[in-house]
Image (cartoon, rainbow, N blue to C red; front, side, top):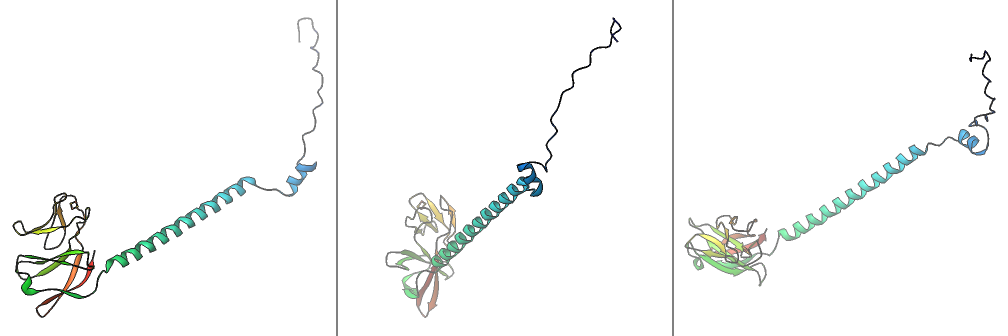
Length: 184
Ligand code: FES
C-alpha cells in the first residue's frame, strides 16, 4: 500500500494471441501429420557418402595392387636358357663379361673361390652405371658413385645403392654354363 492509503492502479490487461497449435494451419498441420526428421536425413546422406568413398578407395587400392603384382610378375622373369661360357673361360677368382638376357644387357659371371659360379646384371641398382669386378678387392664396384656389392650374394654393401644386383640363375651342363633367367 502507498503512503496515501490508496492501492496502486492495476496494469492494463494485454490480449496475447494464443500460441499456434502444430495441428492448426497449413504448414504446422502438414508437419504434424507427416513428421520428418531432417537431422536424421542428413546423417544418412553423410553415411552413404562415406560408404561410397570407402568403396571407391578400396577399389582403387585393389586395382593398384593388381597392377603392381602384374608388373612384378612381368619383371621377375627375364630371359631364356642359353649357354654363356665354358668353365675353362673363367678361372677361379676371375670374372667373365657377357650379355644377358638381351644383346644390350651387360652381365658379369664370377668364378668364386671354392668353385662356385654366380652371375649378375652389371646394371648398378643406384643409377644404372656398369658394375665391374675388382679382383684385388674381391668386390663388385660401381665407379659412378663408389657403390660396392658383395660378389657372393650381389647385396649392396657400401655407397648409395640400396638394392642387390639382379641375379642370373645358372645351370651347369658338362663344361658349359647356361644362363636360365634374370631375377630382380
Ligand atoms: S650408379 Fe652406381 S653407385 Fe651410383
